[in-house]
Length: 102
Image (tube, rainbow, N blue to C red; front, side):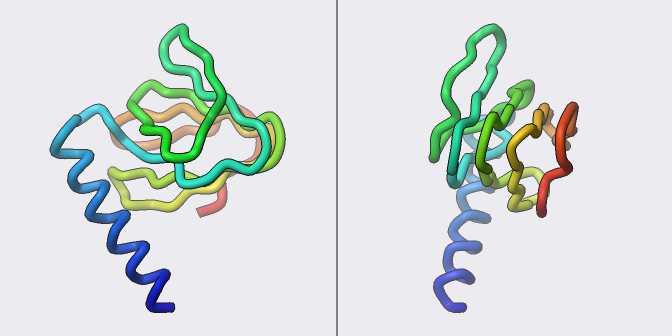
């Protein structure tokens, strides 16, 4: 329980510093199990743990699941296979697939 509390506090501090350092940055990938893709502009790449997320990014999970911290609301979000999410500065939107777990 203490470890989880410390982790949550560290993530909140991280989100606060991300918001100050770079306003467009809206999140951080905490874990990926399976195959996911991150699209930023015209660039498509494999979704990886510790990846910074920015407004306009699109995340698509081909298999498994991924978790990320959405900094504007300090929300831990998990998406599953088949999900396609689009991030902006204030929210994330599901374009296809299952709703994220929060």
